Image 1: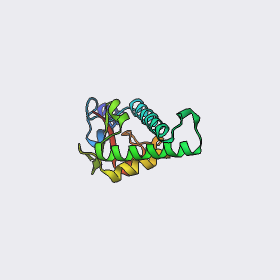
Image 2 (image 1 turned 180 degrees about the horizontal axis):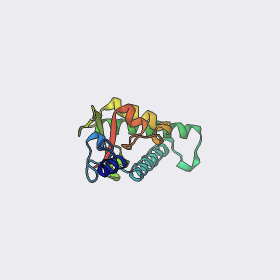
Image 3 (image 1 turned 30 degrees about the vertical axis):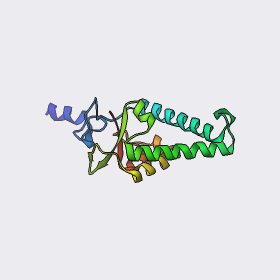
Image 4 (image 1 turned 60 degrees about the horizontal axis):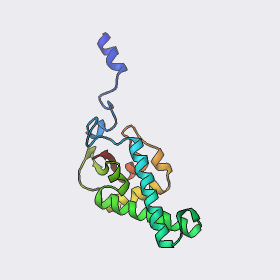
Length: 153
């Protein structure tokens, strides 16, 4: 009787660690990425998009302005959508040792998620709120909508 009580208080078989339900390993390559790595990758991508927008607009990032902000957002969206969809991750993901993989029927695959998934993720990340609402597998609303998960390389 004590063993069933102990089993009831521990983690269920369904959720032992983030990514377990998707068949991901607990740690190491292919495991669910940490929030710190994901946030750092996002900041790197935002900075790179700002630098590209500065070159295109011919003004420094700190000068700001409506035109610059629109260009920065456009470059961020385009680079995030294309690189995530076709290469499985952005420059920030690569630097931080992360990749984005598709999830289909609770199974992950190694191929890039595809351009449509990249566009969905980039659009929702641009709104920021979907990125801070997440499930037990560390998948934000943008990952759930695009049917992807961010894993360690």
